[in-house]
Image 1 (cartoon, helix red, strand yellow):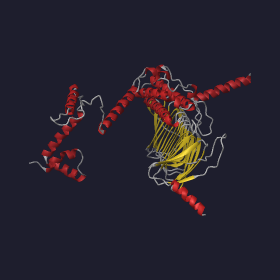
Image 2 (cartoon, helix red, strand yellow; image 1 turned 60 degrees about the vertical axis):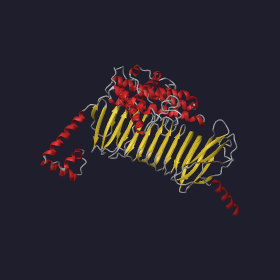
Image 3 (tube, helix red, strand yellow; image 1 turned 90 degrees about the horizontal axis):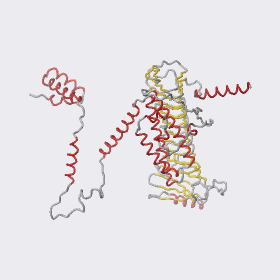
Image 4 (cartoon, rainbow over the protein chains, first blue to last red; image 1 turned 45 degrees about the horizontal axis):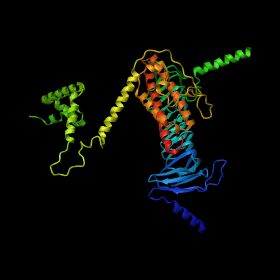
Length: 333
Length: 267
């Protein structure tokens, strides 16, 4: 018992944050993730942190997974190669985790973090999947080749990936989500939303927001959520459809624009032509503003309980018809 | 005799009187022709001032201002006093440091923003002769839901190199007839910067960025063709500007990524 107490005290003294910046190296006995290198069990390290501290992690490859708890302490666990060492740097306002590698290319680290719920998180990576659960602090995530997942959080979140999917579920607060080559999927978000992609679709389900902007270049944009009377909603794509589910009895002014696409509604609307291929329609009092734009795709309006549009382009229809015709000819021969 | 309200005419005009004073003053106007007439004159002055056009300053004005600034910079020292290490004038060109006040910096930022905005406005307003019909883009179409099979993106079929010049990436005749915009200048600069840092990026990242830039280029090209066919289409103008902004942002992001890789290994 005394020995355990002494060891605990020793560990605590070693880990007490010092006023000046310090760098500490842990894990001389790390866990490897490469099959060619030995795998050792990885003990967890827990550090007491003062409220207001930001957790910053930069990771080359692997994953960062952050869960939260109600304690003012951060538990750090990681799986990695023996050739990599994790450095914990502490400055006045941040606790920073970095990797020191004994090889040219940084290794793959799989972080498993349990952080205080209030903690601000700044997580970045290259070939890194990043997920955060149940945080109440500000979250900033940036990765290059990896997916980003945010679940059950509250507070501002900025999420971006070049080649990775962005998934957000059950989050309350302002969300800024951006992917370049993949989709953005937001589900049950309460708060302002800004979502964009270049080559991926944007799907927003169950949103409760009075400010939503979602745009992409090559992909569809789907919105199923509340239309607040005082809200502003903008959905835009170049090559894809816009699919908006909204109650017929909404109070909204819809502005619909396209160049070579079409407009389709499952409920009766009266389109007033403003300019060439720019239309407007008003539902109820028209208080909410909706701007729907697709350069060469169809803009669909439907009731919330109706099935989503397939967003199949006319070209694809033609291709399918062409293929069908060819196959018919082949079978005929 | 001048009454107390005479000094408060401007406050009335600027609507700075509280509601009670406002009411009292208006009652006073009904019984005081002097105040009423002065108020009418003030209103006329204000209307004329509003109608005045902003005249450009005479060319000689800056010469005079500059001369005044230079005259103030020349510092004279009394005889016998310790000479300074260098006068303001002697330091020019050797160790000169530019400094700006915050209002000057704000003014400079506003000027840059106005010039850029104006140029974009000119771009989107410029009427063009119709050039052919719009070629539809190859459509990937598939909803990018998690787990859904992805079709080949447009860019993967027509990838342009990250370092390609703008003239090679926007090859359509319609595109070439449109004026250069600040976006295009920024794009050219960013491409150059990216070309210098390209090796720092991971090949897979480069491929992703190139294919996505190609997608944006195709969208820009189509928007330019559409604008050429329908120069009055405000939606297409806005869409073109928005797509170009998106390209600038992607290039900025790629450049920052490459720069950040200096210390962090290949991205």
